[in-house]
Amino acid sequence: MSVISSGIATGSAEFKRNAAQFQLLLDDLRERRRRARAGGDAAAKERHTQAGKLLPRDRVEALLDPGSPFFELGELAGDGMYGSNPPGAGIITGIGRVSGRVCMIVANDATVKGGTYYTMTARKHVRAQRIAWQHRLPGITLVDSGGANLPDMAGIFPDSGQYGSVLHQLIRQSAEGIPQLSVVHGACTAGGAYTPALTDQTVIVRGQGYIHLGGPEIVVAATGEVVDRETLGGAEMHTFRSGVTDYLAADDRHALGVLRRLVSNLPARPAPFSPPETPRPPRYDPREIYGIIQSDSKLQTDTREIIARLVDDSRFDEFKPNFGDTLRCGFAHWGGYPVGIVANQGVLMSESSVKAVQFIDMCCKRDIPLLFMADVTGFMVGRDAEWGGIAKHGAKMVQAMSSANVPKYNLVIGNSYGAGYMGMCGRPFEPHFSFGWPNGRAALMGPEQAATTLAMVQRRKRERLGQEWSQEEEEAFRAPIREQFTSFANMNNYAANLWIDSILDPAETRTAMSLLLDLAARMPPRPTSFAVLRM
Ligand code: COA
Image (cartoon, rainbow, N blue to C red; front, top):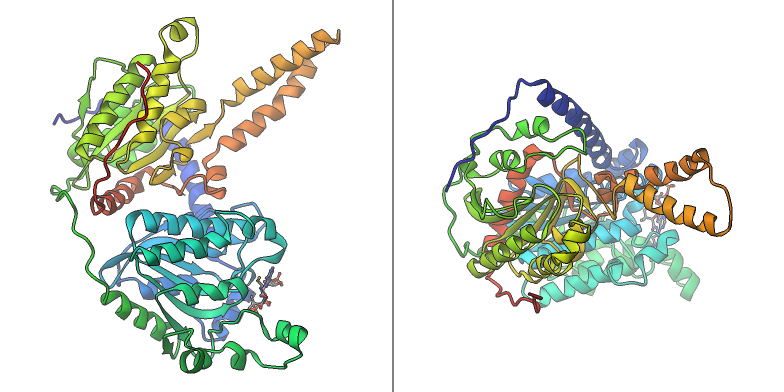
């Protein structure tokens, strides 16, 4: 396998300019993460801890193997959507190691509106479960939630992908033998009461956790019965009388200790199907990526220089390097695991598209996961391109990518526009994970193109009606369109809407992908059958 030899001058003015620009994006990301991780306001946290409860992040930490990492997902979900509420969508989700076993952890944050489920809370929970299901990771739910956020009913109640899907996915995973465990740390009410009842084993904290379909107020209104919360749904009642819970714990730490013991009793984690090679760091520092990514989005970044700073030993065996050169395809190892990389180096042409088809086919036949690194403004347009059959060749690339049953990952490293977003395994094509770097942009088209397209339509309409349209009026028409497309395309918008699983710092990407490839290597291979390809 050939080693990429870098041609980057890290002392150049261009490098420094790019790096300085990238630093601003990283500072913004750190600030957003800090806000999302902070949880509820000081008063809510004070009330929470005064009641003898651990804060949700402390619960997660107490659950994890000491010193082991926690790969957080969807941390910016809901960011900026509900004013200052709810940080992190009021729920923490991520992958971590418990008693030596990699698990999906979901923890409600009761300091944020009583841990109630907003639209984005439900979607974040559903997404975490989906990832766990795909990778057969045991699911651990740390419950402390007032259930539905009632004013947000439309986003959590009626549809698939909302709160009901949390229950459905929990049931289906348990049915498939993927262990489901929970701790009831606090409120667990109404629909939420089903979460512990549906898990295989559940622990409840004495004097703190309670479970009921209807609280004391609802009971008195419905039946006239006056009953206090503890008698109605307290920990002792459920452990000794109703049997809704299985283990009684003295406090949060005790409960998490019991949970760790339950995990230690689970059958061993499956071994990788293809044993990894010894991981080797890249020959170049991944942080140099900050200076390589062009700060001017109109300039093309050299993707080989990026790959050189991510893959093991900077080795990249490029496939058909002299054909269809607007797309780089090649084999590499990442954290010791083989990976097929498909990375843009310009507009997608017919040649690059058919090259991708051949490469994807090989990866499927060899059971090699595919990483799509998107930096593309779309497929080529124009007479020559159409006469050359770009529509059918581009379609073939999309078909191959969509049909491929190997694990797929989408990483937006620059532009990801229009059909290019689709072709590079955008979210609708259900990549196992999708990430963006802070500089990433994804939209139907670029802001300028969108403004031009809509202005053209507007101008034609006015001409038809015999109306004048001055340059100033046209500019006033174009400006908000540009603005709308620019803010839409920002990765912060994608992360807030959960259209990506996380924004990654380029320097974190190697660790993240190593973990994910390790998870994927333990899944049995799934054969691929391609859709009918138009030749
Ligand atoms: N929908 C929307 N907001 C809710 C809510 C709900 N179901 N439950 C609580 N909240 C809000 C409260 O209005 C409060 O908002 P504020 O901080 O702006 O004042 C915040 O969440 C915290 O609630 P509070 O009651 O002060 O905190 P608590 O820790 O004492 O109790 C709950 C939290 C969730 C246990 C309690 O509020 C409760 O029982 N809520 C009703 C739960 C319910 O019946 N849900 C039905 C789901 S179908």
